[in-house]
Image (tube, rainbow, N blue to C red):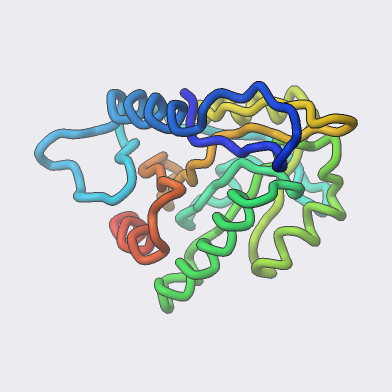
Length: 206
């Protein structure tokens, strides 16, 4: 399943597919799998309640191994990205801050998880500083290459390294996944959704 992707910095060579095409294909693929019966909730995002639940085995920035079950009892917003992301990741995390503000007292229930797809550069220290710059409660997670690949595959997340001269950037899925307090995958929030639309969707699982 492919989704909207990150672009390399302006002027850098890249062979990434057209992000608009990837967004279209991603949306069609997700909608084909998502619940769409008459009893499905009215959402701005995509209803994923009919899909297989994802999981991960990664380390938080204190080095403690974490699985999705560790956050059972709390609704979760889960995003895959990387700290050197030029626009989509900071936009998504800034929106997450706004969403918490719109949820009022319900915001205390929410856990926001950021899984890096670039563990080569995103050390625990860098990841902690990055996530906490948005909100001290946001949780950064990382693993080795195999753990990262397994986590991404579990949520059907696409990512790949794209050379940019002497360095590289990362293409990756730009959806935010919502998991309910029982650990069930429920919603994919589109990158284009407003904070208010995301908060409305989250209230259906709180």
